[in-house]
Image (cartoon, rainbow, N blue to C red; front, side, top):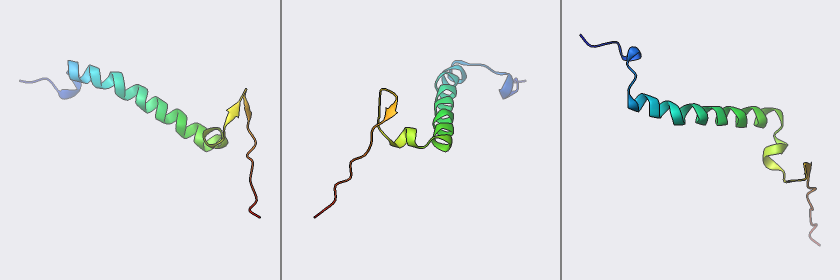
Length: 59
């Protein structure tokens, strides 16, 4: 009789957890930052302050 798949821990399972969980964590951080402070992902920062955008007006 084979053990239940959830009780089996093999090399493939361990390697998947090594890259999948950190990847899910990074995705969660980007989702939270994008939801709460979207300018942090779209603006440029120098020394912790956003760089003002220069808009040129066509003449």
